[in-house]
Length: 113
Length: 114
Image (tube, rainbow over all chains, first blue to last red; front, side, top):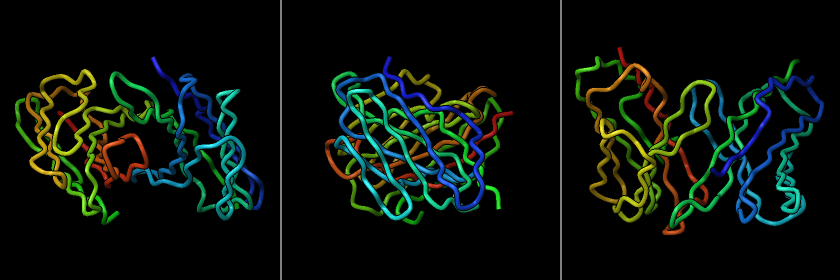
């Protein structure tokens, strides 16, 4: 059973701080990793994708991938109250004869002003 | 959200009712998905269609019946549901045959089974 694990939170940070969200996965051959943001009552929206070891930056967001440790993280710099949401980690994993995105339960982030 | 649309947005049904959820994508994608999202549980993949062909049924009970008439439309037919089927049902689409890549989600249908 392929799994993606995230701390459910809530993770609380003050406005302007760095929020660090972590995710581990069990399928060692996974190649594609995604972070989605989901506001309460809304559908998930893609924030970042990462495929290679190291860091990938996009504005205030940085995704970090360490395949040896089977670990992927998302850093949010200068956190804003509008960043308050649930962040879903998703991993493309082998499944039967194909592949599928396996989602974690999500980490709830709360940014206080 | 206009790339993938879903109707209805909210649905209340009794256990003996029959209803259908509709999803339409305007992104020119070839793969479409149904997910179920229950409280405090991960997104659960239900069905995958690739070029109109069902390529995955994730052990979903037969009271859920998908239909994909073309690459742009996906339906989920519901009948004799149980209260535990109450959840947010999300449709998603992705670009090509190598599904599992970046998926774009619709707004979801929030279903309540009484």
